[in-house]
Length: 256
Image (cartoon, rainbow, N blue to C red; front, side, top):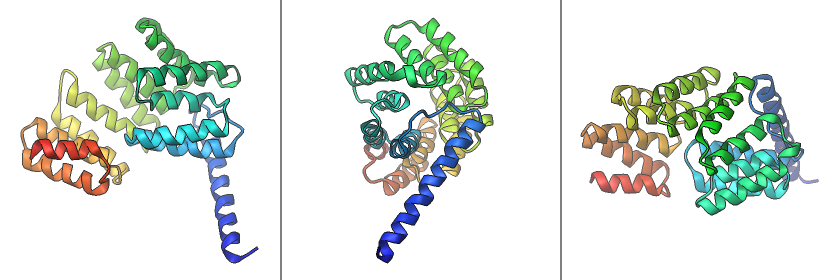
């Protein structure tokens, strides 16, 4: 075995060990379990979840597809692939596959699937009940609280939504998707508060300064308050961070 192969093998072993420790930490911290026996699928899933958190749906879609290709019984993988889908048909197809495999998944994963099924049924009150059950069973799960916040937002319960996102931030202060969600709530939902929106977007930037989505979100606050030069600065920075971010390019063009 040559030196390069040895280094690659050692790196792969170290990464695998890290992911196993990360999975154990998630369980210890009360996070919704990731149920798969395939370490390759788990690696793709974790990478896909990170892409989804930073708003890169295209990359997330590709990674979740890789995850379920490694483990076709991976309920959480199918569920997240549905979340990162680009059409209602794709969402429905992947959600059906998540439901078909859910018998072997944890109850938390089953609840996530049921919550999305009730969205397709337009049964929003039952969806809210299931989301509340999710946080009751996983009160220390930031992602459970964010799931409840999404449902509350769909019902225009914005005060409750913000409380749920605040609980997500408290549960996992390192999860940038949580302050991003709170920033969006203050930016788009009544009562709006642009100062609070900027505060939470900047928290997201501080947690993950490499995510272009977070930078152009700060730009959105400046555009909403008609500070167009400031907005241009943040949109331009987002395009430099990720030249393939079409949304950032569009926003920069708009403010120009």
